[in-house]
Length: 587
Image (cartoon, rainbow, N blue to C red; front, top):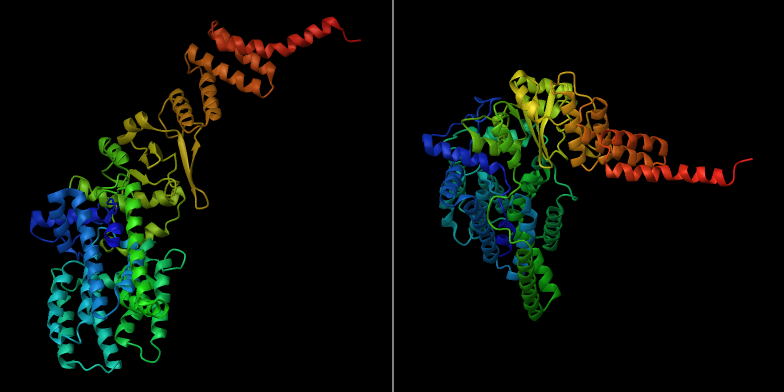
């Protein structure tokens, strides 16, 4: 129940979109492209596609039930993985209560990876492998299932490398534990399993793919490639501590066949948090064993039953309350990408050579290819290392970043999450016009003859800056850039409108005063501007200047009631002084 609850939420994983597109292409062409295809930057670069079966699966599920059906599929795979690990624990005679506790913590540790990607199949594979290894000593003939199992797994995800790795470490541990096994048969089965890794349409691409992800090619600053740390990954370190305690509790009889796989995979998980979820599932039986020893020592049998009932009721209550507060139906999340910005660039023809981030690129590839290609998407190995180094190594200042974009003939940019997007401030107004702006995204167009009409219709007179300390900020452009073609009066009008919309009426008034000074306003509009300028001066105590502004307003519109009223109040102090001078003339 807990696993289903943590997995059943609206789809917000953008990687799914390129998997969907590849699945559709495989169905349509009856072949796997193994080339980038979707990008205009490197369309012919090799794409190490090791998930063709998953892509066909999600393509079929989407055609049958849309994104909601894919969320349900994700949930079923997560539940299946947890159920298999549960069974592996029970085969080892671990009680239900510690098993449930261990799996709850494992699911929490895996939380960031409970998304619609091919590694879901690896979760199921690791659950099945845990069950197979847990029961192997009692049923040694089940060894023969391993090569077939690996063969199927290899069609879905590169995480299949865990199968021979964990099996090899388990066998080494079994040797250290002096377990009697048919070692020749084990060696043969392991060799066949390794061979099954390459019995896929991708053949020998798996080692290249794995080397890329272990650092030889991973040159982008991507969160899932970072080292694990206690602040961001507390559940991982909690599980590590429990595993260590459980190993120590066994004293001088460690089960190396259980510990060795966990030690090696823990090192992988620490080096790259993308493996934390896999390690958590593998570690669950040892965690459950440690918790079981603790529960057995601390609570009598009746107390254990009460604790199990309390845990079940608590989890049920949390699930019910969470679902009442947020039902989280299985559907596409409304904010997965900035749909309104994508609609704008589509309507205005800016998608031909447009810069955007990885996540948006995945959706654009699914929704737009082959009519449009993308700048990049999340298939990182489908782009050369020099591209990734350039994307992360190019300074954020506008000249350097513009030179990078010119290398790929980019003439538009969609910046999602502009408040925190480091590229938001990399567009010089002399070269780029801001043509669309919402909290969800910014759109820039290069100042070219092809975009002249678009810019004239939509340009927003703002410059965007970015600092890591406080994110991006918008600054008014008081004068049009030298390369701008927009009429100055229209520029001032738009600037005042955007400052008003941003809740900055004082600077909006300044923009309107500039427009009035250039005779850009109709008489009624200028009268209102003079009235508000006078009111601002009056509040500041500058009564003479305020009266002058009210006089200008009344010259333009003699019946302007606000200007008449405020001018009378501004005149009042001088009238009082005149009366006092009359009654008591100064000596």
